Length: 466
Image 1 (cartoon, one colour):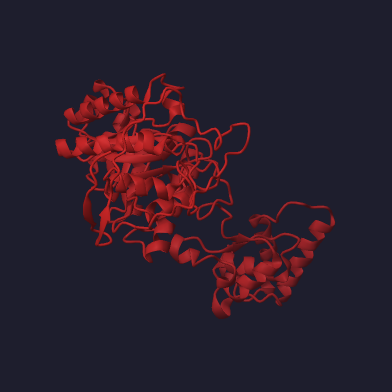
Image 2: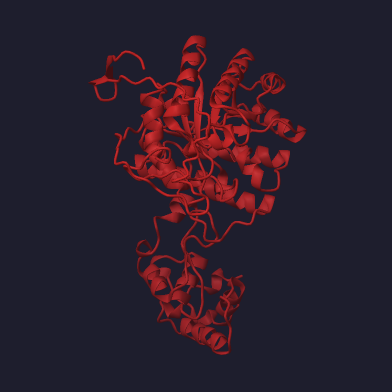
């Protein structure tokens, strides 16, 4: 413990007294937090009611792991696909570089070719970084390709230190510090991936390790980043939750006790407990500059934080997109489905085929009267995806009329009313289908055929029907 010092906090302009300088606790037995993580039961959420101040950085941004973590749970992309996706990420991130970085593997020729082709495009953003093994050969490989920053795995829970690597905490810290120094000597900026941080002894290992990295950064003049990895999705967004599960507590500690600034901090979350997006938002709100995401949330097990979700979340928190083009989200989803064969669940928010589709007749009636009643926002304007309806046995006259208007783009006085006789005749056919035992929805092709049959009773449509 060091001598107490007084200093002005530049964020609050108040004097703060911080007597704590946490030292490594080199324990003999691993701390597995068995009361929190009993394994034979669902993990527990303990509260200690210690709340830390919210402090959203001036600059918050997104980083991408679609070519790294995103490729670990699906068929690998081809070189051409990676280049195409990189171009789309550039367009989505906009001129202000809101999608700040993306990371690649470097082990296969396909990946190295993709890096070279993406670099040839000359984009400032997303900056191309790598994720490599902690070896001098890999450092040299990345440097020779023109990479400036690389991610390196540095597991920080005793589950990994003791049970996976067979090391003590002191041995692990010494090993990691050696790796960071080797990375700097190779001419690269280290990005240290603190794997499994939500099961780590925060004050007994994480803070002493982070403090050592900060000291190395100050001495070398090379910026070192920490990516806090919620590897198993254990992070909790609630106020007053105890460490190591508290997302707000993690970033308060890394800033307040280890001296890291927001631009040198990232959050990498997983969605095992359905908290991926909200944890990423809390990371932003409590001092983390970057949230690391993958397109469509594709990643290990239940996936990563969906990048498209954080684009929308940014606009929700800041009131604008800061140059991002959200309509590219739809292009990306279409590309991944059509060009890579990805099976996208139809009800996935913002990108799924049915995310803004309604089936209930009463909802369709609301859409017919005022789209805003049952659509989350103007999805056609923002995402290029107009609200739609499907026709089933519960659609009623309103659902059928709404389907026709949406399909043919009829607006204002052009719209077909649910009282139209042609709509009534189509409903009779739909009802007959379900009276005879049908259980599936009416397809778009079937609806078009019915519209053709009754086009003479649907004013304004004959010229639009092919």
